Image (cartoon, rainbow over all chains, first blue to last red; front, side, top):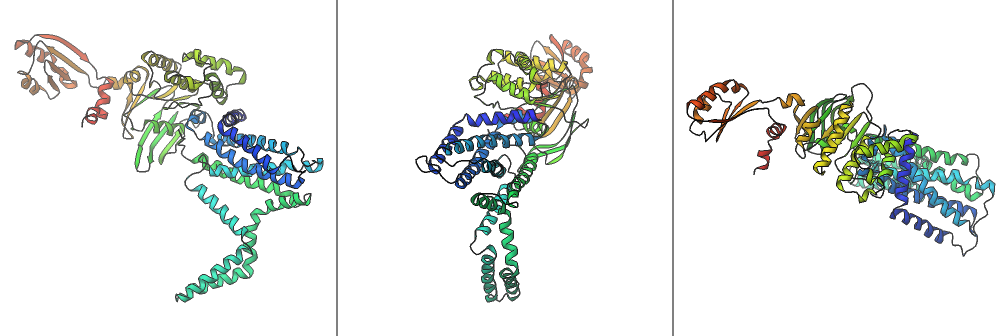
Length: 276
Length: 297
């Protein structure tokens, strides 16, 4: 199994690296470095270096994974897929190739950024790999669901709608609960105006609950999934991880694992109409 | 080796494979015939596991799925890779030990006579070379089931003969092969079993020997037109056909051959030839898919 995964990983990796898209990604990395770590300026903060490079890693991993998954979903792969006892091996290779190339691009930016960049103290440098890796792996798992390789039916619409709802709820000023409570109160008034008293009462009760006891529940529901991201950002900015914050990269990896398992299930059971 | 039970596959409203039940036995070479759009490629993709049936089941006979070598109909390869490098990659996926990969790749290149193109980028290969490469990659690692979708399509007669020779060798070695083709002579030559698909259904299925023993007939040729004698001859048996200077006696009418011959001689006709024949695969195929009807407006 390992031999097969390594073979397909290196095949997909080299196909993307030695293509026009591969050159584009290298140029993108250089442009990113030039803009965010301008060598003519003074040394940036270590927290800036860690967070901005992590952000670049997430973005580039997402894009690279989409490219690798696109190449893995071409009809040239039918004879290769026929050789695999399990399609999950193919998906694992896609993930492996994406992470490998993304890691190289991220390392390129990270390496260049050390020129007139921050001094990497050993203790803090050790914090970098788990943060960057966890973020990259999560971005790759998310990108798999956006690709034709994995998506089945409306799966990517469901997943990204859910993600958008959480991002929207979390981004609302004053919390999602108060925003929703205000909308529901308005809806209740409208229903009352239409003489739909029973429905109006029901919606008004819901709005009141959201303004009171429900507020904390809903706000926590929307903010909880993003806790690891906030925890990592806080820890980096504060100069170190508190014991609880140290769990954040592991939780991101847990998210990635769940997403990958879901992707594997979708990919293993879908009809393969590979593109020509 | 593999059993298909009432397998159906639809693409929206189009039923590509319709209630197909089939057993692929170890050591047989199964020919899948049918016109374009009959569902051959879909059937191959179902067997290979690329598609899931909408109804029915596909299961291994002995509980273990066979290892597969698949030659797709469309010859799509990573064009920038070299032939040998591509085969080395497939060999690696076929669980061939690293130390043996070089030898096995060379062996498979020799089998399909592609040694001369080993260092060529696949993009520079001709259609014939790509067809040979497709077969070479499918053969690597001696998979227990070979699925060859139109293996001789686009090859010159020499190339077709080469591929048939390879399949005959595989058959002699006890390999299980499923192949589709529009070359009926090639199917007659290499296959031990045969199915004919039409609109997704198996319209005919038999072993090759039985198929070729179908509809025996005798053709009696006269020295001139038999138009005058035709009504008398037809009245003898419904399976007697008269075509210009030929009389064809099919199946049960064969027993009347002596009577027909003496009738001809007695009425002053000279018999210039008598031939005993079996139905050819072309005749069986034409009758089943009714290609004459299809091609005519």
